[in-house]
Length: 477
Ligand SMILES: [Zn+2]
Image 1 (cartoon, rainbow, N blue to C red):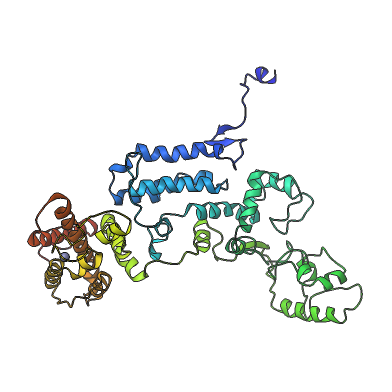
Image 2 (image 1 turned 180 degrees about the vertical axis):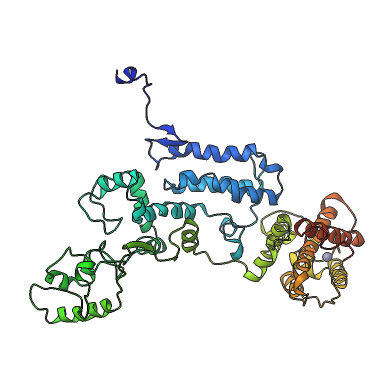
């Protein structure tokens, strides 16, 4: 009746508001259907399978990672949903579709590493989710948010009757699933606890906003927990730091029910030592700070703090392959080469592909084809490297590992101003050798050394020209 009087329709929960289901249970799979569908549809509409790997990675790290931000910054995504979203990302990256299944050449943890750790810099959705939810912790502790409606409602619902010491100390037993999830991020693992419960602490200004015994300000816990004997003895349980601060020539004004003795005196001695190092800043308000970054909490810094994954590639190589001159497709190719995740014949055999007797090098019909053979040992590629080095005025002793060869090449004493161009020509050469190897393996083309060298030179020139100022140099340089 009320609805018809107001000229409104009668709806039911959950319903969609601002693209998000309202009233549903975010722990249920059905709640996330919409997000998964959106995620998937972007993929189909972009015709991902038509893009080359470089384009797919750009799309993956920009568009697809930005897409769930809206949901991820409010809701803690259930593990099953994360798995589903990651599966969609993985399939997109490696080109798997309903019609054809492709090999995922590099494991997903590595793909999600930062570029300087040997990954592709695709964000880990689980960590990103936690870092985004942590923003609510930051806002909660931020006095600038005090007058915002969300904070007023949250405090009156879950923290009424307390002077807030910690976001975790709610006074209500009925907490919404969303707020409960936001509070729970700190308990997921030790690193999260360090980031959130222990990460935010009170920084003293004039002392008028901090309770001496009940807020955590000099220690990670409130002094009432650190010195329980003294707390029982104090006369002012709720006094502020400003009430007890030292005045000229005097120490801290601590008052007791009776003089402390025995172990109370030991506690007092430690407390006085701690208080000696405290400074009061007149005219500056007390505030919460996030310990892990002087500039305060940001999602990016929290992500870096939470991501404990060890690197899988030396920073030396990471810097080289992601140099600004190298096009993405060559960077990605080099990344796979350095991690030994190219579809060379040895790698195909390891993944259970039956090559019958066709496991030898397609260039020299020699031994088992692996990355070391193709790029460092095979006489055909050695001849290419010799000519490339001759082009730059170097001679070379060939090691038997592709990685050693690349290290040696990249460490040659090239003048600093052309170092990037030299590195580009090295990785362009590896890319061109592989390109020609594929031509022979799949299109029955012939090995043509002159043609390959020409390709390296023209591509190197074109890619440099595309990135540097016009007319900085010409082809003959
Ligand atoms: Zn060979």
